[in-house]
Image (cartoon, rainbow, N blue to C red):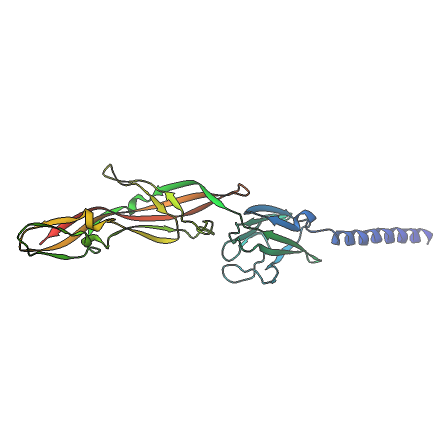
Length: 305
């Protein structure tokens, strides 16, 4: 019987140690304190170690409102297994492909009037821990590199009189007269359009208008256009004829009435573009991809009838 009591004592000690060990594991921090309060001033890709095998990202909430961050379908942003989730608007991306960490990909904050604040809740079933993130906007951004690649099958040269105005000129004098006819083309424009659905594609620009270098236009090995374009969301137009009165006149004979029409030859071209933008505070870089479309009048013709 004495031996049995000894074994009971040993088993009791082992069980007590196991109980203490389990409790100690429960008390382990899931997230190292270094990652619990992050202060950022740029977009970042961060690996967050998790000191547990079984855990999930239970929620992401804006601060100080505690409003739940949702994905593009309006569902709460959670990550309970391997894979990835993205916040509505594309500013935050969370991914997990292992048990001991997850990756937080955060886009730039372009709102200079407000810091972006949010908290990520990690839960292992026993307790929860929180990662608080505050992200400031960069003071300024600049374009450091641009690449354009033409969609060759989209190029088109065509003629149209759609934007031209018909004009009637009357010379009721004894002498031939040079009469202005530029009004025929006063509605004709060249157009430039930038489109991108990338996050922050146009938000990084300051208040001043940004002019960007774009490819020269060659038609039959001749430069037909060489300038810069305004980088902004949507369509920009510029008058084709800058000085209607001086640059466009026709000689009308005495006591003659002439009817004029116009015809314009246009070139349309489409490019994929990639802009590399730099946060001037931190030097960090990010790319923006989009499509640039341009329609340029390359010649005009006046038709007399």
